[in-house]
Length: 300
Image (cartoon, rainbow, N blue to C red; front, side):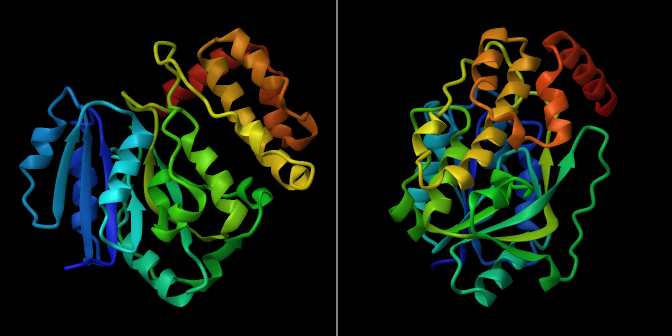
């Protein structure tokens, strides 16, 4: 039996979260899906927790640790459905996430890439996974890179037709940071995103063992985003690249990595940044680190 969605969950040392994440899938209002869990060499109790959850739609694969891109690609190749939905092992879907994606797919047949908004989930967050009625007022296409600047996109809120990967390629396996943006750049060259601007997932931040968090002990291999820039797409793509570079500047300021902060700051045309981002761009690393640390402490 082929299901409408294949839900791909990469799993690496998420023993404190994976049960809740998986439960947020199993309690969806739309139930026509398979779940592909790829254990990426976890060294904690994650795999055992997953194995205790009995549902015939759950398929578990275990590999040695190869990283997030390889793990996602592994799941894509084993997906039997036409549409794949990605979910990180510490995020949560609201109960009508797949229902919303299903309605969008049926209503907008010219689109192959779909994404919803998200809510930030911190240790102090109050969670409400309840459903809400679909409203076309929240539907908006992203047809160029500038449209990405003010859109909230999380890997856990992306649904794609599997045919997309034949055209734009898979996640880049030679990098371990920024692979999502690398993929979005290639995707938007050939496809438009259809976004639903009301949040349908919770994106977890400020918790332990997150690859996107500052970590001086994690050697980050970052894509060469500049290779996608041409004379023809410069006006459209450069502001998005500067947004990506800005996020890297923030990351390395928190790691107090002066060399990499300097490297990525040089790549940015400051005029492409908003006022708030310009302030963060110019703040000295010690000042930025101190202010950001206070913010994180408050949120935790």
